[in-house]
Amino acid sequence: QVQLVESGGGLVQAGGSLRLSCAASGDIFAIYAVGWFRQAPGKEPGKFEFVSGIRWNSGNTFYEDSVKRFTISRDNAKNTVYLQMNGLKPEDSAVYYCAAARGGYRLTLISAYDYWGQGTQVTVSS
Image 1 (cartoon, rainbow, N blue to C red):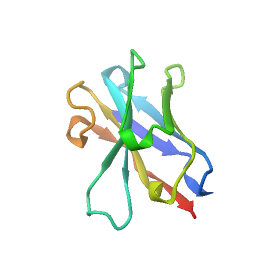
Image 2: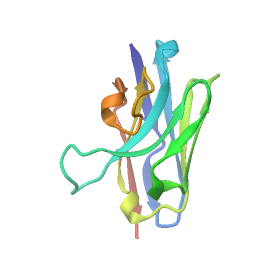
Image 3: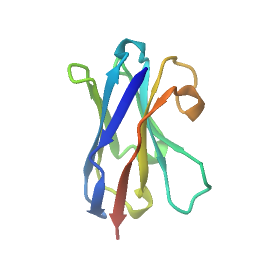
Image 4: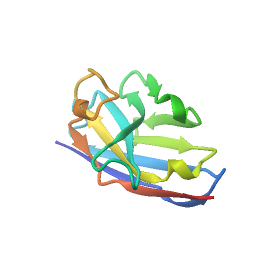
């Protein structure tokens, strides 16, 4: 089992920045990749949008096209993945979730992920 705990969300003005953290514990060696997803208010219930991901060992990163303002990174010594979000827009407001996948197939889809954190709220005011 892998446990994930997100932190770093909050309220920020448009154009501002936040850094989200995802701390992993438990069976770390089972992790192949960590991804960030978000669920925005008012959107289709249950719909999660892929944001960014990173392969745990190689550090290779991948992004959804609309959020290349964001940077994902990891600190393996701390078992933590970060999502640095710059140039935030009101449409970035959402609950952000990190998730861990044991395999490497179709990592932009929620079905690829086995473990999920509880989410952290990001609100961007205009």
